[in-house]
Amino acid sequence: MTDGQILYLVFAAFYLFECVRWVPARCWIFHAKSNGKNWTHAKPLELLRTRGGALAILKLLPPFQVHAMAATWPCAPHEEGLCVWDEEHKFTQYLPWDSLKVNADESTLYFTEKLQVPCLNASDAQAWVKRIIVWKAQSQAQRHHAFLKVAQEMLDGKPLIKAAQSLQRNIRWHNLLSEGIFTCGFLVLPFVYWRYATTYPTFTVIGFLYLLMFTQAFLLWRKVRSDSSLRSGAWLRIFSVAFFPPSSIRVVDWLSQMKMPSTHPLTLLHMEKDQGCFHREAAKLWREARWPLGDF
Image: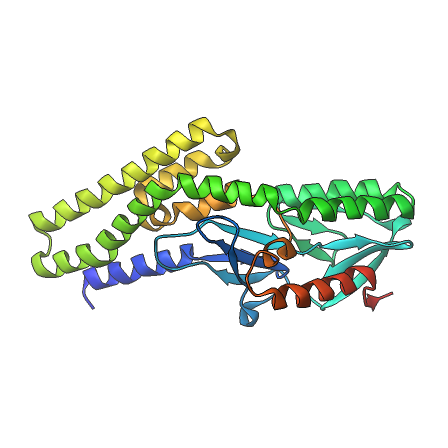
């Protein structure tokens, strides 16, 4: 195998790595249509599901769609304690209110040494910690009302549609550049290198590839300047987009991760054409929240 072939395989491996996400096992991934009102879903791979989460594969080839990650509720308040879904053992654990302790480290909720629940991100985990602390001091009637309020907010699809439509309008140039970088990096450059080796035509294509990547990074920098919600980890992302082709190709994934609000899978399943899946999941999730089965 030549050095060029090895580099091509390494490049392809890095790109495939950018196409996967390690998500909570409760998570679903949804891809938006152009109007932001119609969605298609995919669940994480069952074969690669572990205690910490599961592996999910995003769309492999550009142009990319806005995507949203939605996770079911990690817990529900009941009269005698908090019921937490244990992803490792596949049942609900009951934690009495008087001895309940919870904290978050990055994107993971910690209830006991053995009971840990991953969330979508750090802000999601912190939000659940605050809710649980408030629930602990309340009566059951207050907890029931508070949980229904959280559920109602997460099941409201209007903020999600608005965010998806806005993001769809703002990623058109990013998608065009992603297609150019993908074509140049995976098709044009290997052919030119095979035909001309390390000569002037090859270096010309490499220069054009980096011109596209710098343009992608510049457009991202402009978005970050005008949108404060994108500033967390933005400079590292901009640097990666400018110099690392897989990150540059998949910049839309990062924008979706940063801009799409937290939601529940039922919100997006209700927007799909196949309502059968929505009704099945709604019945299942209601049973789990209302009558949890597990270690009581």
